[in-house]
Image 1 (tube, helix red, strand yellow):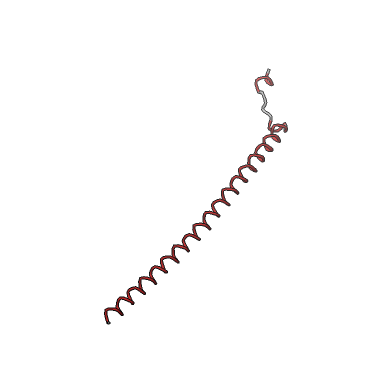
Image 2 (cartoon, helix red, strand yellow; image 1 turned 45 degrees about the horizontal axis):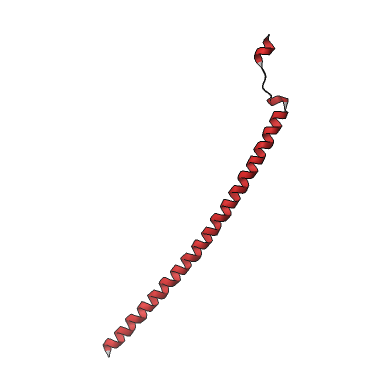
Length: 80
């Protein structure tokens, strides 16, 4: 009878350990899902910022080409 009680206790300990591990796995899965969603959001934001940077770069380039301050001068022709 004592052996039967020990077996029941071991079985209960195993079940508790299994439940603990299952809960830990579920928690890690949720963490992974959260991290994956965050990575996707950061990638999307990065693409948006790259696009905005290209637009701003083109805008600045157009402003510089339209301004006489940034025009290249031909120093050889001015010296003649």
